[in-house]
Length: 125
Image (cartoon, rainbow, N blue to C red):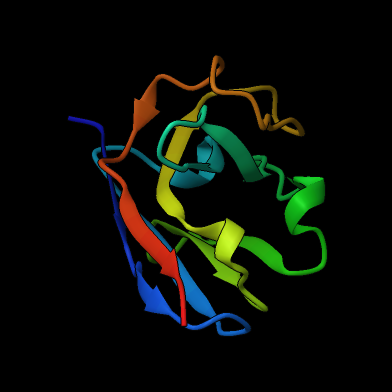
């Protein structure tokens, strides 16, 4: 059974950092495109960062220069390093994975059929 489990969320002050993890089981994560999404209360889910099975990545303009996505094949896990956090980064963060062409990933929800349960990130003083 294909499963994704996020962890690493929490409460952090503005300007702080967090690293989220997305652990996969039941499949080889390296063969999939992986993306991180977030959703604030009352807002639509938005793509934050993605990485293709070839290792190319993309990030949303709103987090450019602050967030980095990576993956560790040996641990079958993807990560989202978040630095210089702002209050507007608050939300539930989800990882998603699906088979996309080798060099492609997407910041849109629709290509992904496999989702984790989410982890809450709150940026507040």
